Each structure stands twice: as structure tokens, then as C-alpha cells.
Length: 277
Image 1 (tube, rainbow, N blue to C red):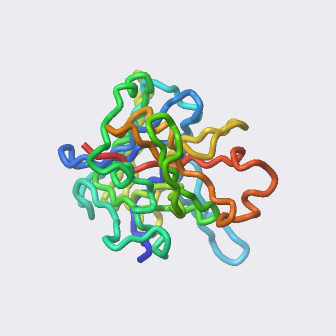
Image 2 (cartoon, rainbow, N blue to C red; image 1 turned 90 degrees about the vertical axis):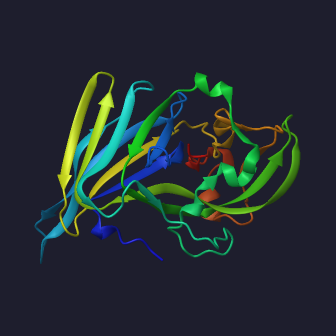
């Protein structure tokens, strides 16, 4: 199955380091955007417009507003619907028979790395997380899926003990790079709070011409690591001390993507699927 995005009123796309949670008690999706001083948070809101072409009008996306290099504290983004909505609360597109090594459905949310799948009931919130701020993204009445899968980078899963020693290694597969959310309603409202300032953007439904809200939290430094898993373990842990690292498999990854620099020079920040409430 592929997601039909053209029927949306607005499309939200989140790329980079963040923890996606689905709260049943609050009936909404949430993304805790990690603000560790290394990742830069940018938000770009775009709407489609018609432009004159050589033979016919073409549709291009123009910026409504761009928020760059947002501060580490005091930022909250709330996206919701008004009027009739195709989804109430949240829905997540998952295939029950998902296999990371054989699936050809690139929109399956299971491509997003799940800490619960890695740790099961041993997963706990780490008390150290109070030292690392997050910016909250609230999305109500959205349909969640994997928007972009990086098929060029293939990973191995490395299990480590409490002292960081390797215990086991196995093939893992590809990892989702961008989470997509489809909001289909009479109207979509996006509220952005930065400190005491607040701006609200409202978009009415235009058939076949959804608005795009792109949220990116990336580490663009030259010495950026290719895996954010050690950072995520500052927020969560395993009661046994076990942790997992994702290492790029040079044999199974696109050689052109790896060419021209060390593996550690690759910029690849990926969201994870958190433990919900």
C-alpha cells in the first residue's frame, strides 16, 4: 500500500532526531524533539500556488513562513484540525506482518526504529533525561506513516552490555528517515510558540493541493555521528543495562553514498518510536 497524500489538507513531515509517542490518554500523537545543543531545529510552512508555464500552469510550493535555528527552550508546535476530520485522535499505518528485510511497503510506520521492540518490558525512562531539554510537537487527528525510507543505508544491530561491550550482532535493515502525518479535514491550524510569542497559521482544505509543514532537527556539524542511538539512551534505558547501536553495513549499503568520506562523516539523524504514554 502507498499513502495517497493528495487528499490531505496538510502534510506534516518530521526529519531528524526526535521521539515519536502516541498518547492514548490524550488521544494524539506527540514528538519530543531532542534539543541537545548539537541538532538545529527548523520549521518551514509552504502552500501550493499556480505559476505560468510554457504550455500550462504548473504548481509550485512557496514559503508561508520559515522558522530557523529555533532556541533550545520555550518552543512548542501544535497542529490540529477544525471541522470534519478523517481521523479522530490519531491513526498509525502499521502492517502486522512487517519484515524489515523483505517488506516493499515503504510507508509502513514499522520502518521507524522502535525502542519497545528492541527492549520489550525492560524499557524504562532514564532519570538523566531531565538534563536534556525537548521541544514538544503535538499533532491531533493525524494519520502517521513513514514518509521517507533511506534505502541506501543498511544497518546492523549491535547489542551491548552495561559496560558498553559488544554481546551480539545481527542484520537489522533499513531505517525510516522521515515521519509523515496526513491531516484531512475542513481546516488545519498550526500554532507555533517561541517563548512568549505565538503565531497561528490556518489553512482551509483545497482539493488536491495540501499545505506542507516540514520540521527538521538535524546535526549538520562535520563531526556528526551517523547514529543517534547513544543520545536516545540518555532518555531511556534497559533495567538490565543492555543497549543497542545501529552500525552501517558497508557490504550492503550504497557504495556511492559511502564514497568520499568515512562512515562517521555521514549526516543521518533518524527519529525513533517511543513508548507512548
